[in-house]
Image 1 (cartoon, rainbow, N blue to C red):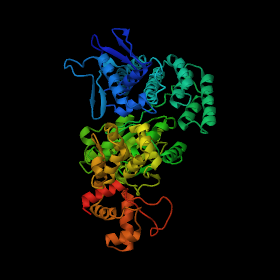
Image 2 (image 1 turned 45 degrees about the horizontal axis):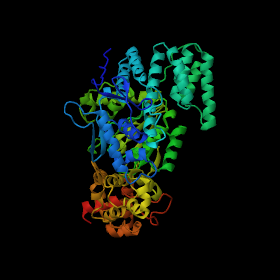
Image 3 (image 1 turned 135 degrees about the horizontal axis):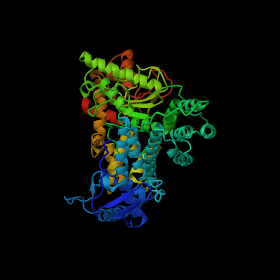
Image 4 (image 1 turned 45 degrees about the vertical axis):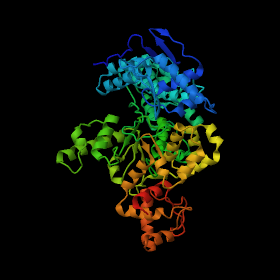
Length: 620
């Protein structure tokens, strides 16, 4: 087995630990980290190493309710203390903590921070398991777990922001522990994992994969009665707390233990939701959408329907909602959750072979032998390419038939992109996000995302600029979110800009957004542009639909338009107007009433920012 080199900090470098209480050591001696607020800033920076941390995130971590007027200056003092603690960055002498448009960025190496080392060892362990080197995998995963000294950042969890970061770290540690325990069970060494699994199940009683590993370790150790009791306790807990039954995979594990010997029953490793080629986003905050989130959890959690399509315009928060739901559904899908983007960075659709190859890599699908060249080839190419794609498709269907996993297919451009990816049998479920409604897919459960309600949009804005600033001028804040059309991305970008431009009155920024000729120019934060995201949706439309949208955008002001007004603006009859409007509804560019109403009586709307962009492009 080839082990990764152990990267240690250079002599005289400080070593930080987050996997337990926040500590810093120099040459084995623990260093004082200053007052609590200074430690909160340091913990927040370390929890997002080598990544810009927005000023408002640091502010909320230290002053969650009402930051003082001196908050920015105080932060500068705390960051200066962190710089002094870290020292210079290597031979170039650059600052270890730098400030840019995205916030403060802390530069730190793997050998200086336990969470970075933890991640490196965990990846190496999983790679070893993928190669069949189970003994090597167990050693690497155990080495990662040895860095875990207790609940991460347990001394600072009274700060909501730090507690959220600590929760993510603890979830990563639990997943690695599950990987290690299952590997030890497969190696025939279940007894080494029993006690640790029991302790973790007591702390996380509803985490099904932990409990399954505990059952297996007891069973393989010859303690069958105890293993069966673990399942009975879990079944009663699920019924009492959630009104649910254990998952089919858990029930099958229980049945396999009844009357059997010590045959190994290692559950398939659960795979965490992954996000390769993820689109840019402003914050990790998730706000609103309680009804839509509850609907996804009910539909996919009960297992009666296996495909959900979440639709809405670019920037509506579809991906954030899907990932939030995937996180909350972890216990219902013991074989994991994976996310694959169906578009490339330039907005073009990826071909089916490319997507299948990525799914194969993420899920360990047997038979994933296509070369990189084949995986990226158009499906209409050579016969060898088509054969490789067919083999990948068959292997993917076979994997889905044998597992219970949640697959998130993100940013789907059309029905053809996903038809061959949906499970034909088995217990896998698929959560699709798309700008259009993908009317050609059936049977599916559809959820169309409306604009955020005023209250939800204000809550999101407040998370970014601070509750105190929001309360100082609530009328201007309301004008801002309404000028954003309730589009989550636009509200986030507004919050990002205002967080940087702390001197700018909310009323002045609201005036800028109210100006149709300037609104899209104002909605840019760093490399995130609302205009750019809307433009990608514009490219999805056919030429005729673009012209229609440009004409209808002129009717959008004043609460929408009726079919009669649409026919007048388009210069066509009622039937042609109905087809034109409904084509844009299918594409997600026009919204329609949620309840049933005749096409003639309905009021249709073009989202404000989509309408402004259409004006720009069509010159209406």
